[in-house]
Image (cartoon, rainbow, N blue to C red):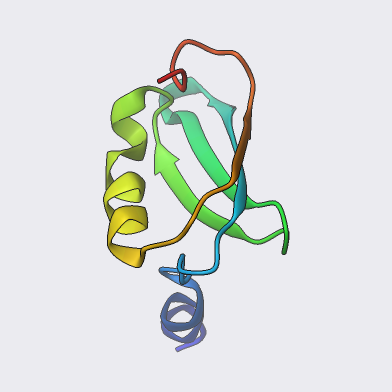
Length: 85
């Protein structure tokens, strides 16, 4: 029951108010590999967690962002080749 409630509340955060985001990856080790994290720099909320660390990992996020009509003003990321456009 708690898991269902948390998933309902936090599964897909609204993206329409995003202005500044940070993108980074974290290594979980072993078979788990990497996760790519997208964070709202204004609120501190994590808005996306994706399996992997390549450009494909964020394709679903970019699609959601496009449909949200958010107006991104700034993106902070390391200079890893995975996020350079």
